[in-house]
Image 1: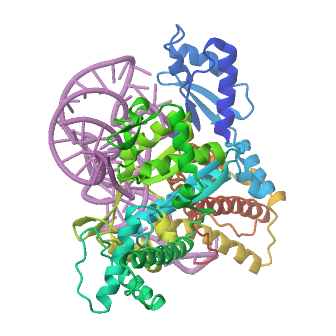
Image 2: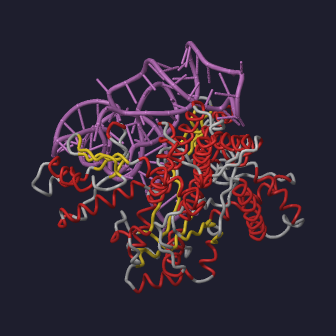
Image 3: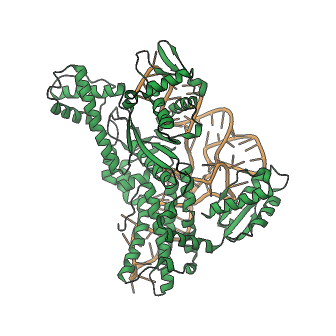
Length: 548
RNA sequence: GCGCCCGUAGCUCAAUUGGACAGAGCAUUGGACUACGAAUCCAAAGGUUGCAGGUUCGAGUCCUGCCGGGCGCGCCA
């Protein structure tokens, strides 16, 4: 919070000293080395090239004006021209009191100003159960949605169902063939069929539900198998996601885009704009004119539409008919070649570039011994998400996924994760929360009534206490950058920091003690830490247990 | 061949988007419970940030060229 105050104060001074450079971008940051103060800005360094003075000279004029500010106990110039700030301790104490007074409101920001955001994630094709690669996307997307709702955006979470096209046919056919196999017929299973064992289960169900399955025409039977498979698989996916605490507001069918004529409408629009043409009896979009490598096919010469066609329609509808101001898509990194394609289409339709943000989630590989394996639904080689959840637990799995940036790939050693589940950092953070709860339980046992609002926080003088106060204050800065960068792992790292500072404090000082005034101050501090931990964990979709 | 992502301590990852002496966890070694929970804490050790140039007050971060890994590059989905 103080970071934002510093930023606005520096900005004020910038405007008064150098009005012609008032939009210069500068940093306010917590220096790695605490000898350089609580916060630091590089404003003088970035101005250096623009005004004809040395950075230290510029810094000097800034610091003279800034040192008047009551929240700053010291302002200093250092190194090549950094301005370093020391914050009055009283500020942090007031901030804690504020938190205790306001409750949940304290944790809200208004970065979004009510903008409507659609977060589309997972969207795994209903051709098989979710595996741990999907889990990564689910954890990430769900957490981003939580973070955005917390920061003033109006969020809809959506799962896009690819229930149209040739792969659905392949799926139906795979089930159909397995059904035949089950009744003893000899079959030849195609290489591009779905190999997983779950196909047998669905085939069994198909035979039960449609006793005459094998006597109707093959086309009819495959259609029955396809629809049953989608139904069964989607239900399974829904249950997995629920167990994983990834919530969706909307399940959006690709097929419905055709049924409601959205695809046709958008194609007509593109045609009116002169952006499509026919060649070799296929229909093409002029993607190359909008930044893609080459033009792309919308309708094949067979008359079938490509995914690209329905994807344009889907996103057109998101922006122009459903009224979203921002669309966040989480895709597996194997689709990255598709990004310029979709972006080119949105550009052609007049959507500003920054309104579509595609987050690519890097692959999750399986580490078996020393061997790395990529997962494949079609080959039937994958570890199911539900298996991992039941053996390791939702909290631990989510925490692992959310403690890494989305753009580094993840080698997942399932055995190690199960074995080390006790050492997963999630327990470290949860334990800090449980420890605080246990202090309060102990206090209650002794008949002590905490009185947070009356506590004399000036008694919090130890350096460990100040560290906690500072961390509490910086929570919203972390929340802000994690929202702007769509990066939940920033919260994860912050929580580990906060938990660490608390554990350190806890082992050094007693909270419950004879000096009741000091005890009340410390209880108030503990309550502040507890609430931040709880809120932070909630943003990750991880529980904050009172006992472990 | 072209494009995107990655390469940081033995392992898994950070580094406030160009900032000051590159930091955590795990693993290793040594220490700390007769007081609120030891799922904890303290300490030690661990690095030419893949390599070579360049840009500037300042580079793990940006540019160029290599090396290594992953993924894409269809009238597939």
